[in-house]
Image (cartoon, rainbow, N blue to C red; front, side, top):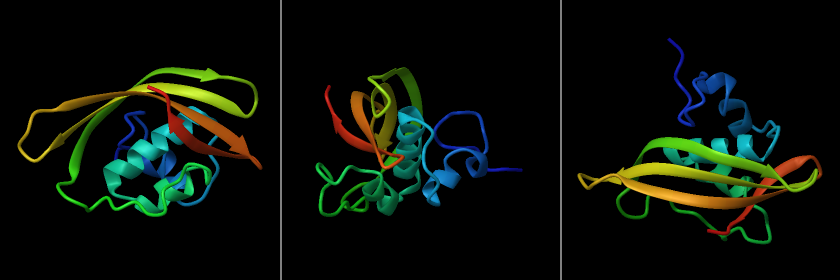
Length: 125
């Protein structure tokens, strides 16, 4: 049985976020955002850095620093293109750290496309 994609698309990981993690470009900002959620869920810091715009990307990203969250689910609330090379995606991601209560993280993220590839730029709320 195929492994379900963590992004909640209902598709198999190998047919959803897996190809993006392996280097394929995202079709749009929502696909990139979903693949970044999956990368957090899978602990793939390398992909997160590669898909982060160089203007705002941290020098390093240590996902093993402290207690690692268990990602519980993703719900996309909106995908708003702002032209051919910019978009915003609003989402709610749920996670839990250790035996604590589940946390809901709501964010509106900005994405830009350069040279045919989408990148996460920053969060605006």
